[in-house]
Image (cartoon, rainbow, N blue to C red; front, side):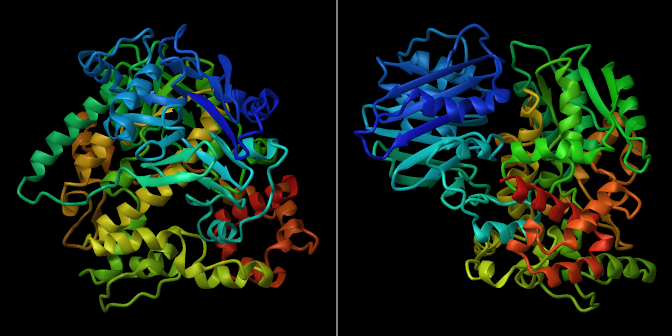
Length: 618
């Protein structure tokens, strides 16, 4: 796991200097504390920071082969690199290192841009191809590893983190109005947008070909999820093959030349990963974050799993009370407004784990793959809103009203705006009122990032659950969940691996009928993550799966109460027309919004608070 950087001066007479490369590479030294490297050839330069996980003494980067015909800077892990290496050796290639970096290079030499279709893993890399006079840049199938790029008439630059780019003297800090609108809507900025103009996130499952003049000559999606269910197989079959697939994926994800462990929140997903990992070796380290607030604490369940599977259990209680102390660090490293407050506990638990080892597996991805979020069932409730029992009907009315959807006993097909209301802070109409008139001129709310993916799902005839899951894979999972984990963990030089966000797992999931992932009982209640719950029941018992889902949350309501310093600071920001917020937002509309509902949604307070602090810093 590493950090990467690169510069192409579009004027080919202007060479890249080491000072330029160092300025955008050393700021991400936390991603690679074990070493650094630089390579340049006239107007093209590559930088690298290394966190040594495989082939500890070998595989320095940037790495070149064939007398610098091909040169790479690479961040990630290819879990099937040994199989690929064997295949390439049979094709006549020889290797001088034991790691996966050289395999990526020679896979590109042999298969060209199609090499990415063969990789199983997480990756973001750039290969300078002196034969074709172009640079090949790729990001993994699901966006586990980040790839940011900046393009102007003068420069093409790329890197692992947004914070790298303002380090370059020619970078222009111009706010992207469309991105700001998406942040207000969602609490994060979905790819390909970033908060800055001309700065883009390469979408997952995509690659670029850039010529030596810094012009993009091809931008292609090489991978997409195909939700085509196989309806001929039984529920029991899907449970068995999914369990085997999880065990297989965990086995791939544990390849390393350093110690590794696993997150163990006490929830279903991390417990399944931990139990699969424990089957492969004893004395596996498992890390649980405890909360003093019992509403968020799942330590008892984690203890049960650790005892059953003989895990070396570490329970870490951390003090998150001083949110203002950690916020400047988060603002710097995320590089743009980012309102997922669970980044705070993710940072703290990563810091604790790094004191023990450099690699950890997580359970991220189970909810998106197997129907774990309440947003899925609430989306489906719009189409089937009338359960038999009156008391349950009232629960539905309350849940839908909280996100601005009017309950009706008349079924209708939900649309994209319904989904935005369920997963976001504000819908398009509300965002249009919050933005100032000047900012709104640069925003097209109707053609946001979600519309492209929603239209694609609709054209393919996906059912409602598959549509919702597809939207999450194309937006939320990489631009929020994976971004949160990557930045918070790499701040502490910790590599996090996600065996449930894996090409083989997701391809399998997409063939399972939706009714086996998210089902409904006769009384109107819902069975979320049916298949994972069936596997968990076999491994941990029925009681383990029957409790209410808690999630990785923080006590925002307490933090932003009128009795805290943070709450009073937030009030001061809202009431001050000189606050940075009001360069972009309408003072009266923001305060009206707070009074008319955000009081019950402390997450929206955190969203505005983070935005104010980020604007003040950058």
